[in-house]
Image: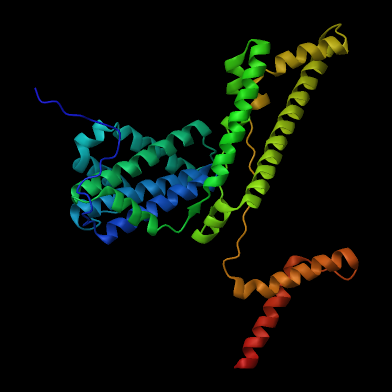
Length: 346
C-alpha cells in the first residue's frame, strides 16, 4: 500500500529554480491586489472585489496551463479549473459549490439592491484567500519553480500595501475585550455569551496605501502607533456607546408598552424591559461603517488648491464673513486660474 502524505503547508519545489511566465505572475498580482482592496470595501463592494480576485486567479491558471486566456466566460473558467485540478482541488477541499455560491452572491450583489450577510461575505473571503494560495502552489508546481520566488515576484507587482501595525493593535484590543468579557462572564455565569458579544468579533479595520514607503513609515513609527491606538480606542468607545444607547432605546419602548398594558410601575417595567431587550434580536442587529480616505495622488496639481483651502479655514476663524465661499466655489476659482495660466503660455 502506497502512503501519500497530504499536508496543508505549501511545499517549496525546485529550490532556486524559476520559469513562471510574467503574464501569469501579473494575473496573480492583480488578484492579490483585489484581495487586499476587499478589506476596505463594504457590503456589495466587498463581494465585488472578492469575485474579481477569483476571476483573476482562474485566468492565471488558464494562462499557465493553456498558454493563453482561452475564455472570458466565468462559468467556463470554473469548468477549466476543475479540468486541470480535479484531484488536487478535492484534496484541498475546493468544490464546485464554493464557486457557485460565490458566483451567485456576486450576481445578486451587482444587479439587486441587496446587503449580503456578514457571515456569508466572511465565508467568501476565506474561500478566495484559500483559492489564491492554492493557485500559487499549483502554478509553481506546474512550472517546476520555487514557490517562494513566485510569492516574492507577486509581491513586487503589488500596488496596494497593508499596514501590519494596525492589525497588531486591533488584535491587542480584541484580546483585552475578550479577557474583560470572560471576567464579566464569571460574575454572571455567562462566560461564552459574553465573549461572543465582544464587538471586536464583528469589526474589520485595515489601513492601506498605494505607496510602499508610506506603509513602511506607518509600521516603523512609534508616534503613529500612539495615534492609531487612540483612534482605535475612540472607535471602540463609539461602538460601545451606540450599543448602550440602542439597548436603552429598545428597553424604554418595551417598558412603555408594559405600563400601557397593565398595572406595572415604571421601575419594575424598566427592570423587566432591560432583561427582555438584551435578548431582543433587533437590539444588536445593525451595521456601522466609518470610511476615511486621504487621496493626495496628484500633489503637483492640487498643492495650490490645498493651500487655498488652508487659507480659507484660517479666514473662517479670523474673518468669518470674508470666508463665505464653499469648497466647490474655491475649486472652480482655482480651475479658472489654471486655465488662464495655460492660455497665457499659449
